[in-house]
Length: 462
Image 1 (cartoon, rainbow, N blue to C red):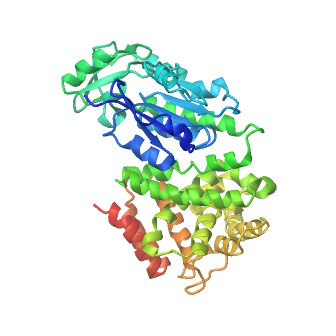
Image 2: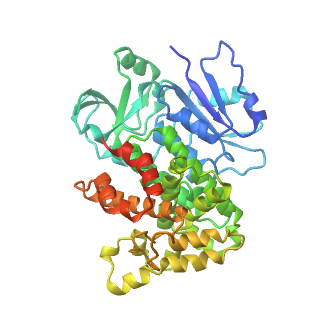
Image 3: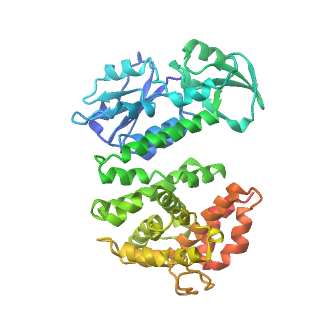
């Protein structure tokens, strides 16, 4: 059988040298990465047999949490370790426990110490997942009927090293039929796993409900950490850029592959660098925007979608790219002091006086963004125009064709698209493709409409 892999992410090549050239006697091998995106692609590739993940805390702040969550979403049964520098403080125990981190490794590392800690391993208990499991009274070895989309597959090989599972574990017999083989909190030894693999079992299953609660718990633990005053602003900026879950889920559900999603997230990373360059710690307005989860979630989603359109638009000029990256994330900054429900941008639900206030948010956003030191003057102008339409039906100034930049149109069309996606999530009868082509396309220039069609709708159309 192939050797299991321990993934190591560290921007310090000196540390990575420790994990190179494994001996034939070792029962595993290391896969080392300097770039976070490359490590994520490797972790997400289900062909890779991964039995441990080691993350340097500085590779994806705060304390590796974004990648820990990514790893737990794709490899729920695989232990994750955080690697700290000599001078770094240990993370708070509650944070580690909540994120289901198996342990902390301190630099300088000792190869044998790393090996002994990872093999064999055991997990911390995760109370919330166990609580869900306790509500399930089905006994081990009992058959269970369940909708296939309510069960989350895990590679059987991921269990090979043996662990204490914090999920109930099932084997699929046929569509809609499963059998429980392990109760949460019980040990799952290697021999038992090998017996199932020998019988041709490739995946074990856990309840999607339990996995979803765990990931929500990861988010809440991250939120607790980020609200602490001692956490530097640049770390908080990095974390809000990990929002955009709704957009990511939509793209995944429609068949966009991991590489495409990485492309979108790379543009978000570019936005992150530009936001940090504005020194948000010195801008009360920017700090307030970054503390608004709903607006940051939406801004990140628009940055992701805009980034995917770059190739079709042939945008290569650095100033244009920087304007799009920053304006797409900040486009709704004008809503930051308005009623929270305005963030839904559903004009049909607003009363007359509310609508009058809502349509001023591009103007308010223009003035707010202008007050941010070092920001390019093109960014506020783009924010001002993102609700304008070539038909003259937009706001706040009802500008028509020729009065709107392409960058503003890109933000406008992706913003409208995301709004329709949200409506379709609540109403399955809404056809996103049909709605865009019938009701939205005529509001934008041909170049932007064509680029959007090539990027999204041709992929979404069956």
